[in-house]
Image (cartoon, rainbow, N blue to C red; front, side, top):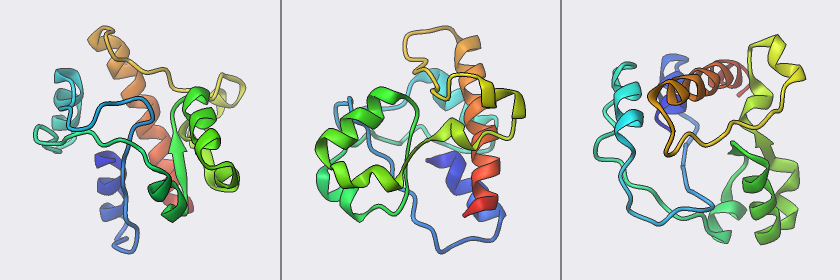
Length: 135
């Protein structure tokens, strides 16, 4: 969320509201230490961010829904099947052409090393850079 908001702001876009919510999260959880560290490297303070649980209401009001993994996609479609036309894996927007032949999922780095977080972060950042040009 924070990276997309930053990218949109840099592109002069103030007409897009970015909301994040998890399909498999408990609400009001803080980001991991690695997430805070990586975002700080981008000039973003995420230390006070808290997670939110995805709801049907949120799905219905969203024009575009981005997920990292197929399991998230399936969960959303089980909640709201008509969201299919607005639902994408974030990596589908990657600027890395070599990624087109890879699994479009971005694996959750929770519980993994800082290096895995960095790899995930790079993929997310590349995808957002292309996405901001399309919005």
